[in-house]
Length: 194
Image (cartoon, rainbow, N blue to C red):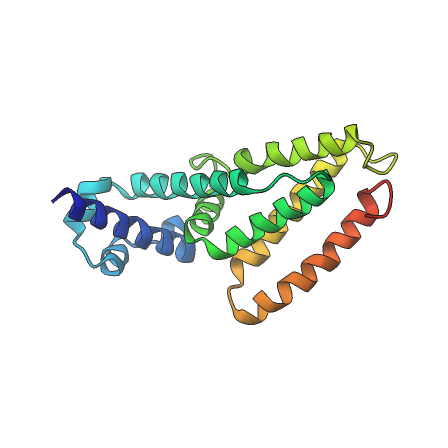
């Protein structure tokens, strides 16, 4: 019985993530979630109680997936290379993971109620830029603070673009576009050609 309840709970969570990612908080329908999960409204309310509780659980799942992604990134000797890997991984996760897309949508729809995903990845980005600065890998005159602002915007834009477009044409173009963008960024940041 507990295994069945756990499967039902997970099915509702996945259906809710799809619904929140597609329609946001206000547009999301509990009835559509129930239909997607092939369960009942009673099962949904048993496990989560309210739409708000369900949104919070989906958001917690998105945060956990971001944290796992960051933990799995391999450290590189060059912090600028590691920055590229970090931002690319964030963009890919926004593209591939429904919970992350839902969390980003909930964050935009309900500011202040859903903790921002930047709490997960921005400290990592700052740490890498501090390492690059300490290793004198940043161009003279580029402060870590300015680089954080630039790369935070780049990361948000990459996640938004990659999260919103989910087709094979974009997938195949992404790598070459990303390489070009990163080369421009490195030209502005790096103390020497990278």
